Figure 1: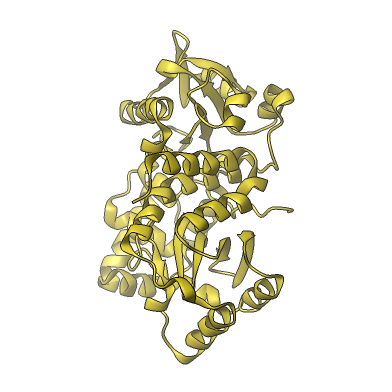
Figure 2: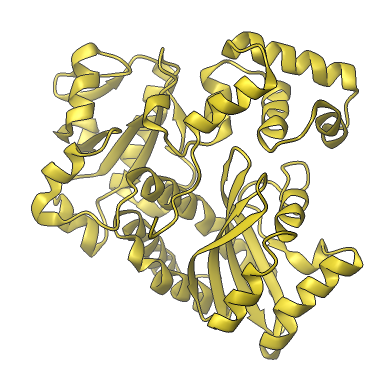
Length: 378
């Protein structure tokens, strides 16, 4: 089992990556070494325009990376099937050899594993957006045997924190935040950003957040503390801030993509700041940073937050995920194991609640709300 101190150290390194993304390769190395893997990667998959991009890697040769990217025309289809919500829940590590099928897929898998001596390739969805995935991967060398349940459990513990760091670093879309110019840097973002201490007390709010609070939509300041109109969302954010202050290792998925149920379909992400050498230097008295995004900000929120904002039922939310991945109504019906008529009914309800009349308009709206995952160097 992973020692509590080591788990805490890894989580701290992951959260530092949200502020300084260049730390990802070293953090991937630490995660992989902890679970006995020889290499790792954070890969971005576009499911609608067959394309793969390596965001960050560790332990992989340039030759392997070129070979991996040469499969950009075919592997996204494999990812779409293997990592569909129907087959693989978010945060659940998937050993790729267990889902490889078909001669071509098997030859691609062999081409990417055998030359490197990889016995198992374990990958996990860390961000699911409209037609796009961000996937964290760790590769085991044949000399060290198979991955155990303990090692899969370590990944299950880490994935919520990786999801949060990927979502926030994508939202910020910067190489790093310079400590000396923190206030000016935060003011440059369209998203509302608040640095909060104990009891959600506001220590700093950027220009966008101040504008939101002046309008009291979707957030407000009450006696100097962050307040949210929707009681359920407010309680979830307050709980995430308290967990961040007390012990960030326990925060899990709390405070990721919280739907504020506001007029602007706003979403909140909470980033712990009370631990870690980098983050404590940014704001020494802070417990957390809260990021408030709206569709006009083009945030990297998950489809679940969109579903919550528009009051979709669980069945309608599943239909929305299928449509967002580019599936037709018939394909969605097959994926969800429902009749075509039921799928059409779900889609009609989605149109009515979101306020569109065509599938193309729905996709366009999702793309405005959920942009492509940030690609370093672009």
